[in-house]
Length: 91
Image (cartoon, rainbow, N blue to C red; front, top):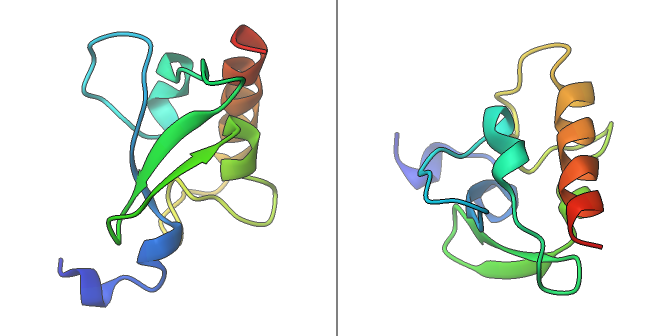
């Protein structure tokens, strides 16, 4: 799929800092997020820019930067819980 086919590449996270050597990313691996920069992590977006954000700023009930337009029904609560847990590990 080309980047031109994506509706919001500047809002889609491709890569984030983790707390181990795993290469997995996405809502299934939120327990691996590392937020050690004063409670924030670096995120690489699909358009190529990098931004320092709190994990909780990457998703809400109305948007999800982890899978914009591709998230299955019911996964939002799991995503929000995983982001909150990552933030709690690195206050």
